[in-house]
Image 1 (cartoon, helix red, strand yellow):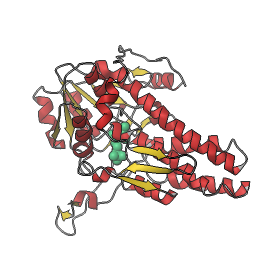
Image 2: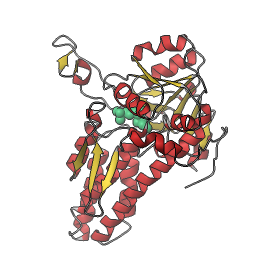
Image 3: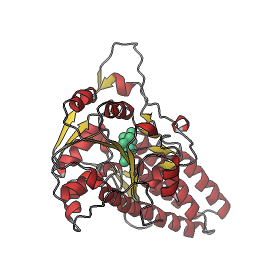
Image 4: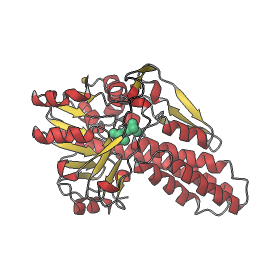
Length: 372
Ligand code: MRU
């Protein structure tokens, strides 16, 4: 892992004294936690129940992990990756007493099942493949399973540290006394901790900057209203929720000086898949001359994907659009379309903020530079 910034533009990192950011986040529950040792369990904050209820679901087998990922109990690209890393361990642990050949076959099956749970966030496949690669360096099944757990724990710790650094690199972008608009939830709840797009806000707030956050509600599943507003307000940051279709008028009013969003997959040329609606926000930001930044760890880049046209876009159930809280919103027989993500072309992105610094302008060479 590189530790120094290799970037095409620099921003001065801000590092508030130890503990200040952490005390802001003390009231935000962790999205993913591993409880116990090799015989432990995966606990996932059930984000479907937020903001009304804080409850954890226990995942004791691979189908339970897959169900939690598909139902968005755990969601957000990095958090999905962290959960799936533990999911892989849970799967191979069950085969640790088998012979080496059956163990390997089981490992490959578990990896394929987990990777197929959701298609767009590349962190899922990245984490599962990384844990499997590490595990299969050991030939004995029991040792291999133990190695898988160590790698999954390592990914979780690394994601937390990486997100903290994204915040330090991005905090100086947050306008003191100004407004920041974000879409979906790219916060602590979407990662091991701190978040990607929200991490600079936590670091800036801990450093004394005061600003107002506009959180798009993010139809159809309301991650902005339910999750972003939940964690920012718990941390004491001034946040207002707006309907997605109010973003243009709020920008036109002059209240927004910065847009910052997360990412689910960034292609080699910088085209970025993120929650449906992000593309519209980027177009609006360009129209109103507002800088539009993406914040993401290097695990969200997919150099094998040349541009956004190769990013698989998850299509979710029509019922998520056609009903809400158990009530039909549309007449019977009317169809809905429900793409879960869209792709923002690199040309609309002012810069991409990573744990090693800022890529600005967004170019293929700049991206290659930070990926090493
Ligand atoms: O469908 P979701 O809730 O998993 O979508 C999440 C997003 O689109 C986030 O903005 C993205 O994963 C970045 S999370 C740090």
